Image 1 (tube, rainbow, N blue to C red):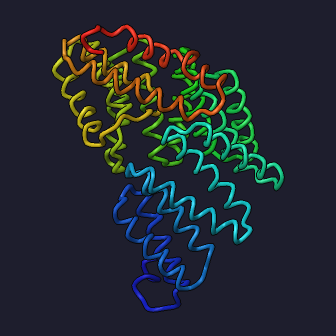
Image 2 (cartoon, helix red, strand yellow; image 1 turned 180 degrees about the vertical axis):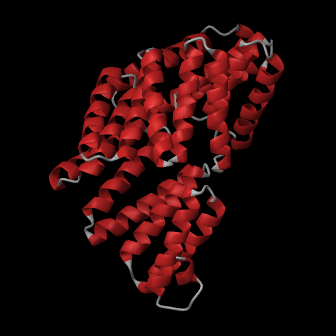
Image 3 (cartoon, one colour; image 1 turned 135 degrees about the vertical axis):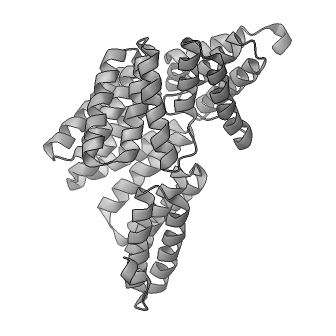
Length: 364
């Protein structure tokens, strides 16, 4: 790739070189440099009139933007990529792009739109026989159901995805499925199962050298251990996940840091808990809004508990922000039964709503 981009040549070849270089930089976590290479790849692809290279460059830019916390930009890149692949009638690329549009819709709290993308992708995979994308679509439908608190349906989808991943011997997808299954078990309160799922995911991530999945699995292991009451071991696993994510250049570490602050509070290290919590609140204040985290809005309860235990008046601010984010997420769900289930059947959501409604009158 370096040879391609340091010599004169046809725009198509130069574009491909920049694309490969940008992709390599993204995998190393060098996101700004990756973005620059992918922008050059995109410009050259348009010059060459190569829709496939343009779509691939746009998807690469979407991946980088998401890793840098720019979810709306990422979504727009993927929308443009989808248009390129539809024009080319590249069904395989359309399918994977639809799945990523679902992931980004979930990032932005639009669970109904995410489900529509996953269902469209699954229909395409079953019509065309692309089993790799089928496993991804199934796994993400499972994550979508998990998000809504439908843990039985979530488990069913993810287990189907895991079966396909093992049949096609794709260890990265197997790793993802195990990680997603761990999240479902964590949310349903089966912490021993979630620990085992994340441990299996971690082993595959380390064996394949997939550092982002290693970070995610380590975070899940830490979260499970904290919920099982082993706070020292949980702290070690959480800090390992955070270290890897920082090395990869990730900036949105709300979930890991929130759980870590809670764990330090549990072991009596109040100073460290508050220091970590200040970093999380700094993110929120810089962004000007709250987010639904990887493990759901429940992570804000960790922040609230630490603040309340330290008699910090900002607990009310975090509770109010979490409740407003819950209401916004509910407003994005078009059908009433699903909206009600999202608010009432997910334990964390129910607790946030109850605590907000029971807050002292002076805070209303």
